[in-house]
Image 1 (cartoon, one colour):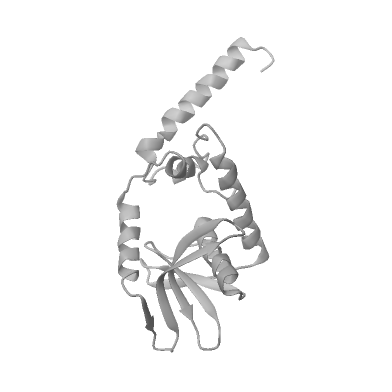
Image 2: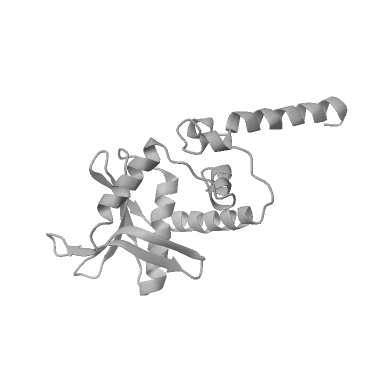
Length: 195
């Protein structure tokens, strides 16, 4: 499964719930800083667009690129900003390749790579948009579409480390949801000898 936490996704996009925490506030502040300029030219003569709206009709995606560099040699290079230290997260890479796919469709140009800028370490991490990452993006989009058709919230993620610093923890209540699920399984086993 490519969705980091289907329950969080459903709470945000199906239930319309969202709360900030320190991490989301830092991310919002970083994007607010980056989104101020419409476009500039950097010292290497690349045109830099900020907060560029993008979309893909094929995937049904809309969004906004934090930064897109248009180089004189024709290279198009999306850069996503994250507030933390430099480290690889699949969800960040999927967000970036999603932006690249939108740009490719809009501009009819191939975009082989981009970067995540980690504000905490002031360093970029280059991401290659290989076939596996593109396939994972397609799977993620399909998973979200499937999630939209559900009538109940999915269970919390089994990776409890992800819950510790999640901004949605109080709304999600992962421990309570797990206890309810465990109790239901125990009740079924108690009264159903074949379980």
